[in-house]
Image (tube, one colour):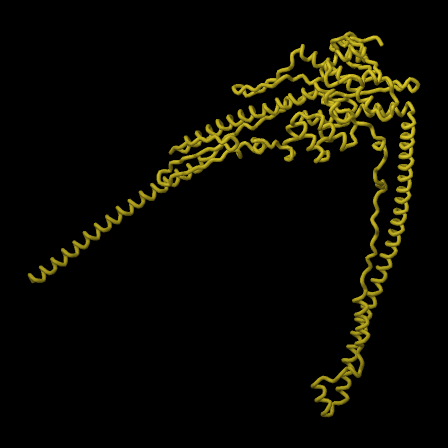
Length: 573
């Protein structure tokens, strides 16, 4: 008994030891599980922070965009008689429009005017209005036409969305969720680096940094754009103050009677009628089907006994088998006749439809032939009218060559109207030719003081982020105005004598310079003559125009005017 008790005690102790070991193992497993759970929770928390940080590494604000305004080209000029508007300009030939824009964006008005003068049918005053519309909306036109973008260091960035000008290179540490972000302003190359563990702080710093770099970029661009504005001002003013120099160093435009001729191509005004097509139903398959049916008409000879009928026929059921064969023949013949009749009916129906199609086609063909005849008559009338009209132009050329007064007046006037000026004003010229004295009188509408380009310079304040226009002082404006008007007078006389060099129709020219403005006393428009000059070819030809003082030359040629033309003092002719 003692042994059994001792053995049982050992077993019992062993079991208890095993139980304790199992409990320890379970507790260890629980501790490991909890540790894993804590590690998992920690990793989940870290992953959440990483995700938040990655989301934070971007700009979420609203950036200020470039607000470019070519204030050097903002002028008011809108003749009431013209139908030209911005929509007309926008729909213009793109290549010509781009040439105009590319010249105006650097202040070369004369090249822009010449482009329209040589490439379009617009009148000079329509061209001036066209130029004014483009100048007043120059940035819009540049932006909409990529071929007109500036090819300078900022040109490729000028019209891109503000946010696309920044490159954000972020690096998030997956062990700590700490981020490092490098922000690059692409146009300027400026960079800023920020780092942090708090996504909200990082986000705020990124927004602040990008906005700061963007503001710096805009300021740099505006300072750079200021050079563009200054260049435009310099080019326009230089051209405006050297009107006489320009024409003496460039060829004088002369009117070409060929431009009056109608060289247009005939385009019918009749509603277009297309040539009809005869599309009949194809009966080939149906006719072939009928022919095949006729070739396969069932006959008694072709109706053979079936295999089992032959067997019965040979054992004495000859009459019965013949009868069955005849029955099958009758059925086949009936089916054939029905099929053939159906084909014939369908063919007849299609033929009837084709007949209707043919009748309709004949009607349309007759209408089309009438249309062709009418178009031909219309074309012949067009060509005849064109010939008659162009013949009148040839007759006018003959009259011009014979020095008829009205044609000489027309020729000189339109030649003078072709003269390109860097001044935006509505030009008007009237000429009278005295054939007996070979003298021509030019009544010329001069620009007003308000129509002369008067911007002296433009400045830019970085602190205020704004441009300031500085106008020329009144004394300078008056001086420029006088020089311009005296130049227009001398230039027009030079142009007329140059134009006449191959005609020899003029010995003397009288130039009357008129201005049309509001009379402050009456409030009505009033035209007055403020300068006049009469000179002959010899006297004028002896002057070296490249070296003159414009007013002194004007007086040397016995011109009549007040010295200060801004007073608009009328002269007695």
